[in-house]
Image (cartoon, rainbow, N blue to C red; front, side, top):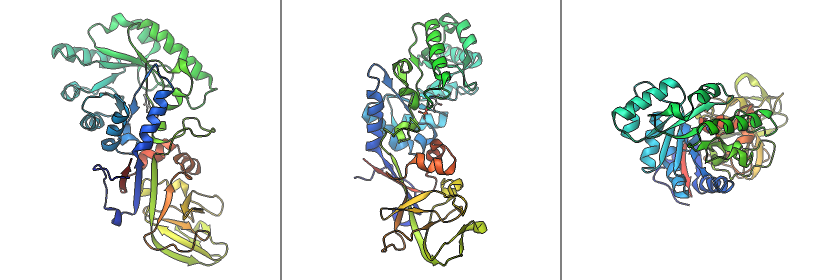
Length: 375
Ligand SMILES: *Cc1c(COP(=O)(O)O)cnc(C)c1O
């Protein structure tokens, strides 16, 4: 275990929450996904600060594992990815905002173009600058979010891209995490039709869950995000990915409450019998979901304390969470850590308890935590 120079946040001794990012697990997850489709290139989606894990550490780790293509959502993220991976191909999924083409060129970043206006702006800019920097072309096959419509793309065809350098054609799954959903088969079919209209362009379709839909979803370039960071790409089935993110909260106070006492805002949780409560220095302002609060009517999330699963006691506050540690081993003290995310309590578990998605849990983490990178 080594401390990465990219470690950030407050010093460990002062930190209320400590986020551990296992770069070895991140690399193993990338290798596993890449190995599922040896005929395809496996990229990495590193938008939203690499799903909360930190672009500065996660991008170089993925590059060391062999990843050569990265996707972000914003130009500012792309610049950070460029600093972390000087030779990679870096694409910006959210398209080309007016007048930003020169900023792309400066750092050799590539937009994902999704409208006739964007194509025209990129074509004009690259022509005027004699710039050989190919963009991706996004076609919408059902999301109704970004991209040319299928009809627009078929009408345009490869001839319509004359003068605009394009490196590959892409679309995005609507519901890949639900394999039986018929929309998957429809999108796979539509993408095959589209590729026939752009015969020389490579294709990119699969997100994390899409990688698990089999070879017709793989095409030339896969774009996993969530699964790289340990999220389960196959909800309802055992998670094949290694956990990447751990979260510890520090105990600031331990106290006993008596039968009938309540804990936390709005007195939503009532002690049944004498209970020992640990209050930790992590709350919703740290990105931990308030919806994972517990009440007398609904269990909330749990923490692992000394190897024992312990339930939350009452509301998650802005900066604090109370945990019923009565069943935990007896030698707990001030400054000790409890685990909010670990091998036993996954990102998907917390999401389920909070009625949220694991993507939200990951991308909300880390604003105030100390970060520790291990490899
Ligand atoms: C976020 C995103 C991905 C990655 O999706 P995951 O489900 O996290 O694997 C891939 N492609 C596009 C267009 C995206 O926006």
